[in-house]
Length: 286
Image (cartoon, rainbow, N blue to C red; front, side, top):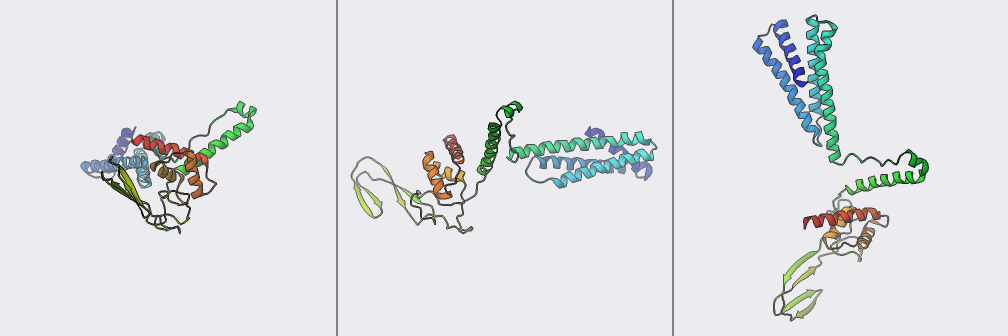
């Protein structure tokens, strides 16, 4: 179909340039090929833009401008050749059909790209008319749960970085400095808050010397571990990932940390789902 439309436009433009305007045949062919080539390149750019998240409105408008010009040229060619209404429809139909198919294809590619980017929500579950008649309350509750799942999934996709520089008015976060020191065979000195301990074991061990540089957060919450930032604006998924990375996988413990940092209104299902994802990510990398 595209080749037919290009052929019609090429023939009409070349015939008009040669017969009506008296241009040399070689120049008329070159002008027609340049017009068709620009239309094809513009359409290809619009298709490539539709596959990405970038806006390809300029390429799409350019393509439809070429298509509209093709329709005008072919119709005027039919008028000047006295082909009548049937000739006008026959000459102008091919570019119009190509433009329609081109728009359908662009819409298909754009929707696929939006679906892959997570910008299209899943359809709500269908219970059926008889189920709604027999169990109206339960069916309505099913829709409510599905909508809540949409909200939870949308919130999980938010990955807000921690405010390390205090831009939003919270205190900067200073992470715990951990140094791993090998143990000598004869004597081990463990420095822990100013206490000197002597170990005479002959087996080689590895002891972690923890140095607390300064208070991690501005909340002065002593129930939180030193490796977990007390940042209320931190997303639930980021909080759970930090806990899993530090060896904490207990749901109750992580839920307590989340409530201490973000308040008691935290959704348990959000924490549980984020925990499953974080554990799956860690086990997948292992």
